[in-house]
Length: 287
Ligand code: GLU
Image (cartoon, protein in one colour):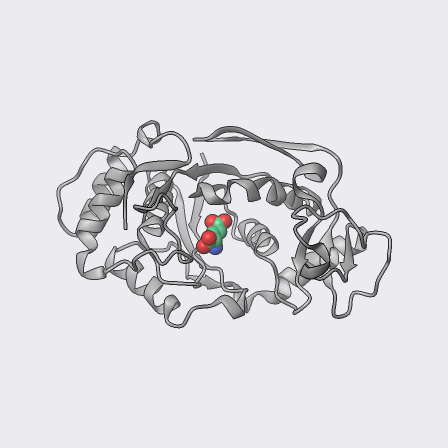
């Protein structure tokens, strides 16, 4: 099997234990399948970049002894590629300019296509991609079948914001394709984004990927560990202990605490996705 996986953190805050679980799972799954594993920094959303978090990501990768098989790429250096994809969709009239502000949309989370037929000029407007009235379903390797109706569940979605920022949905799809990614392993908080990404990939003529969405580590308040609720930054001083905890949070046999690269090597030989806790949450408390 050809396998190329990736770990794609956004530097919107320091890495936390939930990020470590994703890094470990994506790495072990790739290596257990004789695959390649790469790191990509998803930094298109400039206003949300958190000072020093990129440094922290790189320090953690080093301390946990994860090695990207190709040089790490930074999405902020690849904006031309995302614009080219928008251009490709423009040629086929699959995108349109949208002047709706967040205020105008109010509490409506699903965009109803207000600007679809307005044929606005693209300059200084958001760009949305059209969706059609169809179900997109995929078989997640852990979560089973997942489906969304593009119109009723999702609506036409933004690829480029009015302020010029390229949306995550577009950048992730373009880069997964250009980097030859075959398998995506990431947190279940991104499960509901997958149908949008599959749709976009179809419009751009890209092959479909395999997905595995991991259960999320929760804090004592029952919230998923995230930058928003200030999950503790990974402390590289405790790299071996944290690595061992992440491996056991993934339901894998425990390993002796040693140097991270030896621990990872052992985790790869023991890797068994049938042992990963079922569902979208890991029922243990993490900080
Ligand atoms: N950059 C995203 C994040 O940090 C992950 C993207 C992905 O794995 O598809 O949440």
